[in-house]
Length: 380
Image (tube, rainbow, N blue to C red; front, top):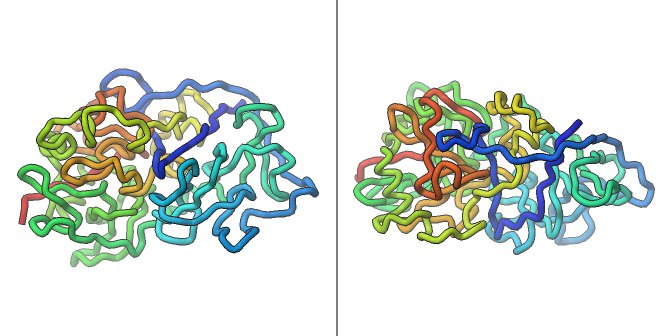
């Protein structure tokens, strides 16, 4: 038995994706589960002679990428045409360059991106999985098993990206919000040695176990799988600190105390905050409650149409200019008892709307695929 977890028509304009944390509807839980219909599934290899393309084939001079044999264009995620779906990690470039597919219904198997197609249209050599797509039984999820997530791979998509200055009165990567400086983007990490020299980019898909420093970079995959204490240490290594609740709320709500970073009225699809299906349910293929004991699995965040790169939703910006304070990843604050704010790519409602969203169900040692952070600092 496998759960039906198709991703419906996805418009990311160009940006709307989603993900999650725990499984209760209490106002102190990390996330919310999604109702899921269970049905039988099966997998087969497509051998239809009428389809001869493969996952890397091209059909014209403008074609940069293919997913399930369908042509796409590798472009900046913010330039993805309206009605197209950007897929992270499918172009050989920086993470903000993504394969944009027009007018498709996405699905996934083992975090490999796929498209719901009539079985005869799935290219030879790719796999068909039934029970994951809406419509007739002949409409199946067509995927390339070579793209399945390797839980031991620890990819480093942010390698080579660097912080820039946004505000002369603040450290790199930061801008002024009220009386403090705050990271413009959700933080990512670099690995440093004992002399504070950068050794490499840290994988955003694994829990940090080495000495790391926080950086705030446009177009990066933000760091998840992080606990509050490690986030605080990473901020300190950058001569910054975790934001207090008051500092974080001021930056998100601005001096006008908006409910959402962009104002007081909810604007659907403006932030990365409404993924229809819980990524853990999708990755493990079941809605059994046991999946919520495995939220540390590195492949959950690599399910397509979940996490997005920083700044991919250009209208999800505060009055002061901070991106993604609502949705994308939960963000730890300095609360000694443990609080993360702003919601994540599945939910920004259940624990309070928009900027007021606060999860207090976990102490500072908790981490899962949905927990991120950003730093604050005093002005220079």
